Picture 1 (cartoon, rainbow, N blue to C red):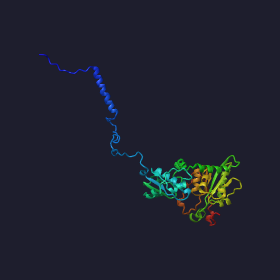
Picture 2: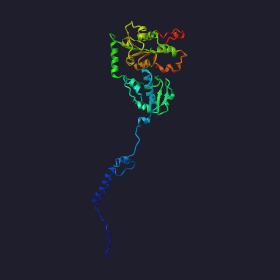
Picture 3: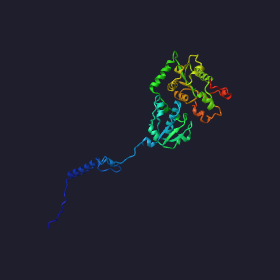
Picture 4: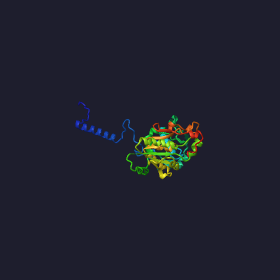
Amino acid sequence: MATLVSWVPFWPPLRLSIFLLAIMTFSIFLHSRGWFPASGRRLPSSNAMGRPPAMSPILPPTTPPATERGMWTVNSAGRLGNQLGQYATLYALAKMNGRQAYILPEMHRKLAPLFRITLPVLSSDVVRSVPWRNYELHNWMSEEYRHIEGKYVRLTGYPWSWTFYHHLRQEILQEFSFHDHVKEEANRYLAGLRRQRWNVTYVGVHVRRGDYVWLMPQVRKGVLADKAYLEKAMGYFRAKYQEPVFVVTSNGMEWCRENIDASRGDVYFSGDGKESSPGRDFALLAHCNHTIMTIGSFGTWAGYLAGGETIYLANYLLPDSPFQWRFKPLAFFLPEWIGIDADLSPLLNGSYKNNK
């Protein structure tokens, strides 16, 4: 009887190799097309797979919208110097607390014609609809201002102390950089004062008067800068620089013309001796090399933007002044600035007559 032999199909080696190679190639192709998800790899979104958009997952944005991070603003109160202080304080405190800063339309109207400010502006409708939390500031930086609670905060008060924003000085200077046409006008005026001088040094002089003539002695128990203070301050620059030119700005120009000695030929009164616009005066002061200020935020900001040396009127309030609680000289005037003490004797002996 014949032996039964099991039949086993026999593949020649070459054909077997071709078959295995074909399987491997097809497998690689499937993986490269993404039909088989690899380990640890995310599946494509449902929308990418051809499903309706409604089936797509909603992922949180990388950076939340500004309204989600909060909206901070500041009251727009006072004149130009106060507005500058409020803007700079908002800019610094919002950044410190991780919030987005916005300004009110009225602040934009006052600052934007002069400066290249960048903070976004809230519409009037948004201002009325937001549930603001008012947060009053005093005029110097305090530790609690680093941790202000609230998503929708409106800072209030009249802050303009350098202690709020000086750590961001370059950014603040950039915010308050002037538009080209403002710079050109100021520099053109200053160049016209050079005359035959070769080594001119421009010194901006701001004499604050206006409502302060009665406010200081009657309400705040303080004095204004007098003739002696201005002569001493100008004497400092005359002794230090070869050819100083003093550019006087004021909201009391008539008093300045009567009390500032211009006989040396180095004193010029802005606006041909008539009161000019605050914006024009401020641009002139900020484009000078150095500053003589008296009192107030306008002159302080002029010195801050001009850089250089700044002389200010020191100790101009009586010890019992009701304004003393709002006044901290170390927070108002930079440490390198030079203070000249005010003469308080006329106020003490009752002979002060509105500094006329």
